[in-house]
Length: 352
View 1 (cartoon, rainbow, N blue to C red):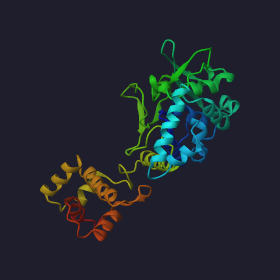
View 2: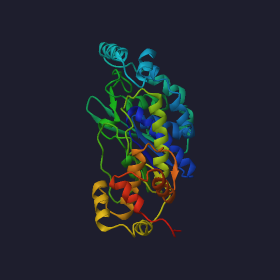
View 3: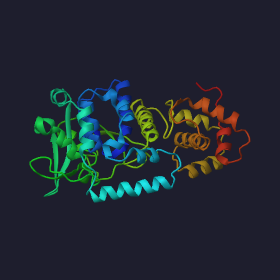
View 4: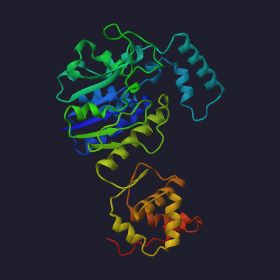
């Protein structure tokens, strides 16, 4: 059985929406999904059969309603350059939250009502679980859907998402609950303990505690190498960027492609050693040390990415190594930085 664990991390959860599309494209069937906080909400949509709709749902989320912020504040927050009006609105919103002892849960509750059908979730053949923490004794609650009553399932999702910014409300059994990240931000062990042999973990670098899992377990991690913004990034462009980042990061891992911040066709270490066959040892060691690399492959890819990122190449494309080298040689023939010189000294002819 194949399981999917989804970390919590607020608006960074949009990354998981893009990543899941890569799973669908690769034909990887998920038998069970467990999540913490926003991961619990994304996981519920996947278990409901709405995984393919995650990017659309995320792009259309009205964050002003979810967090109870004014539309004027959201508009100001989405501006490229923050002005005095943004600072003023930020202060007023923060003051309102403090006076109210937190953000009302109604916006989150309305969102869950909109995107989750409880009957579909309960009847789905996909396992679904989440993590929350009971406040009175700080007891972690690892629960699969069969352990939750149908009537309270949405409350459990809300409980898992209960960051300290939200107003405390009694949800289940007349108790208060905290965000699941206070105990386990990425519930891999829920799936391993249930007998799953293969688990994918989609990390979004959320705030919380990371529980260790058996180092010998078959766990594949998908995570961003670049920033996803803050957990409360109220920016439509950021959400769209995270969705695309999630897709390309996941497709790189699932298809075993090369690259770190970019995606390249897969080639062997032998291929990269051949590219470096005319490079002087002193030049190679200098670049290798500068980039913190260990092998010919790592050194070459990191050097390519260094130049690509310096010059604003699009992160969201699939690149051929040989073509990138040729393009760099053509477009930057006079750049004197030693990384550029290193790439120009690579030999690409007579390669298969």
